[in-house]
Length: 330
Image (tube, rainbow, N blue to C red; front, side, top):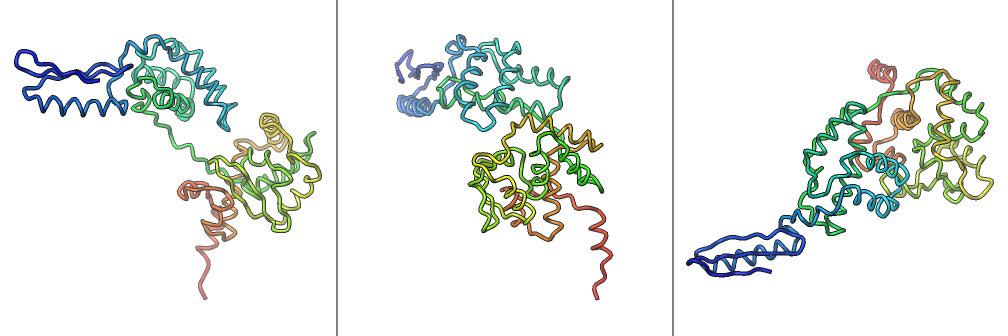
């Protein structure tokens, strides 16, 4: 609500909104005062007036992190991991500060402190949900937070792109080691990863009803980007899936953590180091290109929407390039 009064020959305007600080200005002409009042009222309706610090002094960062963890985070596919991140963050002293006393400088100090223990990429992943919770608190919860304190925080992370391809003999050793696992599902999962370029979560979520053997296709109902896709299958992939589609439910009823532990044992038995399970996706995508598939065809299988990201996964073997360079056109 705007109030205009004349004092000492000038027009004083003040605009107030609940939860925001008052803004005021003085004019020599009444029409100018009225125009400015209408403009500021419109800004107030859009929530653009400066926040009133007093209204945020009774709310701590700890409180909104807990609320976000318990109400917003459970709706995400990454809920379990995000809950661990938020619980760890809640133990830090910065969470005891009131929202009125938190700015970019405080998070810069937190960032520098954590950088002594973890890599920049880890800090970036950690602060993504914190940045989002401030947006939710500001936009959806109506808290008078004028600016997200993480919006201007520098979070530079070095390029974490991996170029690990399977070396000669490693695939055979991996598959032999996987077949030696007590859990007989580990071997087929590893083999399918190399045939389909599917992510771990996508593989573990496969159900019988997702497979259409007559068309040699597999439905992936939910992927990392939140979109469903249907991928074509090689004959080897079809045979692997049919062999484990005898019962309803998930073909590979293993928890992500159980599979992670099994994967580490597989690598140790095979005598292979510096190989992530996700590297098998890199390997499969690179093989698709080496077989002559086009970028759109590989994107259909891999699920990449950004072709620039897809090209980061392609690491052709040097000997294959050398053979093409040495090829003589008749």
